[in-house]
Amino acid sequence: QVQLGESGGGLVQAGGSLRLSCAASGRTLRPYAMGWFRQAPGKERDFVAALSRIGGTTDYADSVKGRFTISGDNAKNTVYLQMNSLKPEDTAVYYCAATYSSLVPTTSGGYDYWGQGTQVTVSS
Image: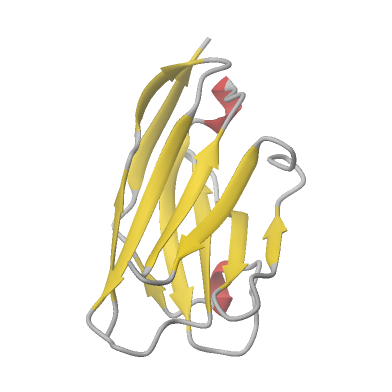
């Protein structure tokens, strides 16, 4: 089993920045890929970004390209999501996810483990 713990959410004004962190624990083998998803009230859980822990490949949703950056610290088994130029439409609960498959999924069904989520609120 893998436990994922997110942190770093909060309230920020439009144009501001936040950095989310996701620490993985409970299994010594590092997940192949980790991703971030978000879910706004009344909406589906959407892909935000993903990172291959082996080759460093990244993928982003079009809505966040150029503003968000996903990165990882293998020594700490932690993945980060740096969010810049935040917009009110970025408001959502952000979830961290992990998979041991040899893919970098961009859909929620591709991930096996999920964190509890952290709230990000961007005021206008």
